[in-house]
Length: 299
Image (cartoon, rainbow, N blue to C red; front, side, top):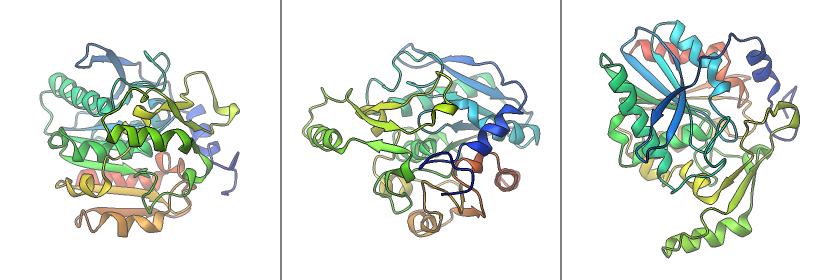
């Protein structure tokens, strides 16, 4: 366990210390999804003609990405949008649940349309994500809307429970109920979806870091929609630039496995390891931020 870890899970201490000293968060702004639901995002503006939509990981919302988003925007290389994904945030319609498995992808496509409508001078939109948000970005690449992204940015991405890059139970962060997941998965293959609202996944967020806006359990459909659909197929669909940044001391992921997992499917992918960084450090570590800045400047 890395120094400063709070439980047999993720080390939250460095991230929360950074957030406590950070400037005030931008106000949440709305956009309307295709089903009429009002969803929310934070905007870190820059005059750049590149926008990044950066997706948060499991159990939380966009707040913890503020240091990373602000640093990128203030450098002038991209304007950054950090949405609160459906089922998450201070006041979701149904915490920890969505209406159907592909809904997060549709919501993301609707946000891309909203961003382009409000910034008609944009040249490109980069889809990025941290942890499960990275997994959703990969799913998006292989889905119906993948052509909307000009590039992909993956920060310590969760690529699915059976990916070589993932430690057992994500290093203690996640507690999946296999006695529910396996039969529901089988029923889905048979076209039976009436049990997809069942809670099947819980997260071990230490009490000290809870503020009431966390999402500590997921339904089957949210858990499934937050992961790659088929990792090989989804990665194989990536034909635009891809940057992956992971910490060498990631508690949930195995940094050394990313090269062999991603490169055969995306030969031109750039994969960078930040020495000494943990799973959550990666969104506040200056070396990681500089790696992303440099990549964006060359685009």
